[in-house]
Length: 299
Image 1 (cartoon, rainbow, N blue to C red):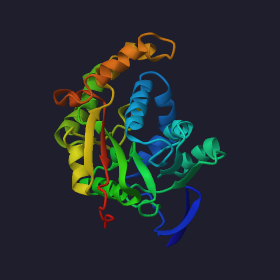
Image 2: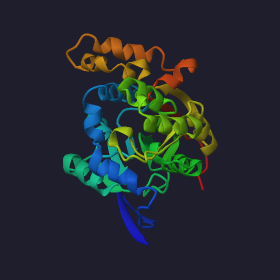
Image 3: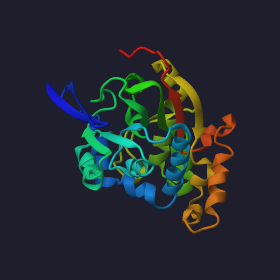
């Protein structure tokens, strides 16, 4: 056993945690993010900026000002950066040591930022120690429902009663729509991947082509809030993030800060975000939930 020392809101708390070991099932995921894929850059360019802007909007309307935020699966700090700018105290947890090192190198000089390596299913964080938990990525790669529920329950454990948990998932139909938008669907190998995605939600990429992502779970719109509820949280809302614009690649230039079309594209996503019949259109879904006041700590 190792002992992790976690700094949250200037209070150091010792919590025992088993050392993390990469399993064979997770190794391709780690390789994808370590060598083939830069999530930080994806969200700062092209249509990734639509996702980032919409995540910011949704988080800001649910997270109170200047609170303690746990950014689980926070990667290299792309969300922690703007959360700090908003006045929050941010503790980032990520499974990949390389991500934590990059986040710490960029943001470690900030007095309200800390970071550590950790697993969403067994967070190295004390009970009821944060005001908001963000799961903007961990659920993507937990293909077993039991693991996803474990991540939800850990978020319930560490957030204060009345605190908010905001979780993001990839939509079940994402590879189908992306395959059409990028013409990959005309490749029989990609069609086979899509067929499994639609049937089971488990996305596997035996080709190793980084354009076709890595091992993941794609949620149906009704699954994400159902998981939160089963974990003991109270769901506030489930919304689509990007709407249709994500599939229209020429719209990427409209997201430039000085482009008058930017607000039109964002508004097109906002007006349908909660429309039940269109939740399956967005590339990503977000469920916002809270820990009931007086709720016991999750086992």
